[in-house]
Length: 367
Image (cartoon, rainbow, N blue to C red; front, side, top):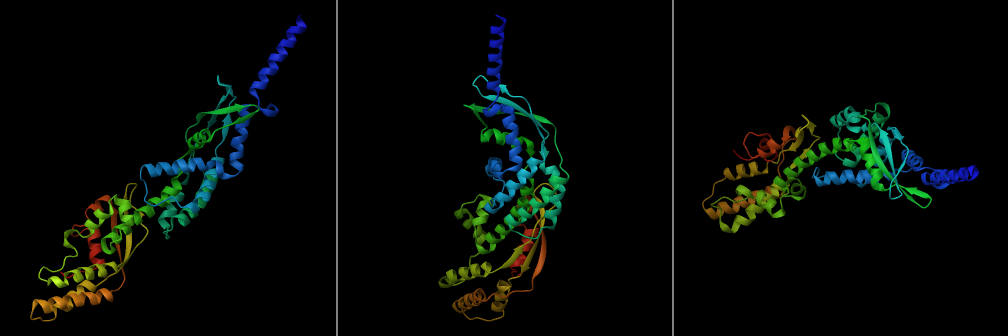
């Protein structure tokens, strides 16, 4: 009887052991621990889900008009792996669930990517000269990776529960479960990208505003403002900007409006890298301007002549403006520093505002 009881207990013990281990005697928690270790060393593909989810969140809140460059994907996945590698994980023993799968608690102290890279991000963007989002973000990621390795800053210890599925003699963990672990352990993981994209997105806004105002190019302006092409066109032509003089002969009016537009389309300006004033949408930006003096000089040339009929004056007026539209007259290049904020954009049509004065510098008009 005693021998039979020992035999039964041995069978029960072996059965329990088989339930808790996978192929080759591996337990569910051991499997998960190995997978976490592999994520730190193997290919970066595992971090694709995390990156895609983060980018989807930015898209959902319409955070940026600029889009994440394809060529930045691999460098960012590598950065996420480097950040993940700085986090230590403690995997608890697996608990079997009623459905035959296992729940495993993983304890860790999450890396705060924003705090870790803050000084690096600020120093880089303050000195940034280029406007290529992929190149500038990629260069910053290299410096941010060094910051993660040398001076990581962590949050508060936390525990996340993951499900390990059992099928036959093998285990598996879904991408959703891995993403849950990665997002919890890497707080603010898009901080380096945000640092660069915030700056370049602000620059793109000002460039888009100027391009829409002077050149009638609306693609980026519509993305920033949400306006339709029809609405942007109406805004462009509002307040009679391109209306010819009221006493101009009707046969010249269309040519006159076209000459006005062609002169403005040839305005020259370039928006530099904005500098943050605070953590809100407040920047200053240097704008290089080569004044297009065509309107002013055309008007002065017309005013210096005498005419004896409306017809003669109308013909001369249009011919003079068409001449400058074909060959604009430019002044010397200068640089203006302007405020770039939501309030400055709203006040752009107010005389004396930074953007109003910028417009006057780009294309001076007779006073």
